[in-house]
Length: 215
Ligand SMILES: NC(=O)c1ccc[n+]([C@@H]2O[C@H](COP(=O)([O-])OP(=O)(O)OC[C@H]3O[C@@H](n4cnc5c(N)ncnc54)[C@H](OP(=O)(O)O)[C@@H]3O)[C@@H](O)[C@H]2O)c1
Image 1: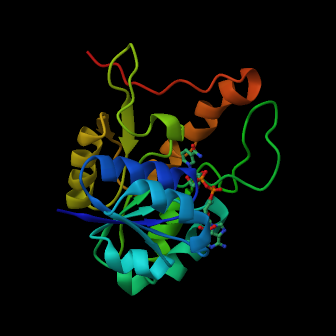
Image 2: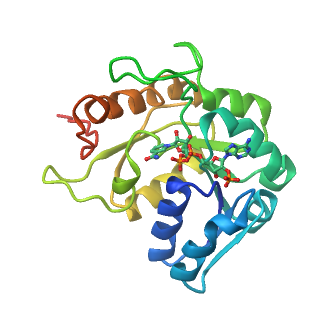
């Protein structure tokens, strides 16, 4: 039985926590303010707990990074690099800037030849980052049901064993997985968040996911 440590108490952290609990894992959510999680903990059952960022990092065999993009590096620092060394960290974050969207297009603080996950991997080379869950809205992260069948989750990262671990989780969570290579693949996967949000920001349409069609 795997123990999952979640760094981030927002809607993504709570949604994935509930998904892992549903699939029988033990979960601890790490936050700077545990009072935010009182209601979640009451409803989540005995396999759920909360603590600090470093408590969750120590607890988890596998870690989810689900903090605000501008705070991703800070969140990892608070969790403690040594607590995360050698562990698979699923990076759900997006480099969304603190600036308004332009005609429905979010602004990023990264350029086309860089990505947030590469910054994280460079700052913490001993952590096994895998990008995933960043290109879909939280209501569809766990066992989504679409008439067109299973949607596609694009993943990337430098560590093949970590990507295999994440692929097995995505299988449980009802996704097909496409491996887009090493950490540089995040330069393409992170902006899918922009594309996913455009129909929502322009027309209030938020109920979709990406699928890669193949021959
Ligand atoms: N919302 C979605 O549907 C969605 C979908 C795909 C990907 N994402 C990405 O997933 C990530 C989480 O999104 P979200 O909507 O759940 O929440 P969010 O509002 O983007 O982030 C909330 C989390 O960020 C943490 N945080 C903020 N400033 C911090 C700092 N200085 N140091 C450490 N932690 C800090 C908060 O910590 P505390 O717990 O201490 O408050 C909280 O846990 C984001 O990067 C987002 O782009 C979101």
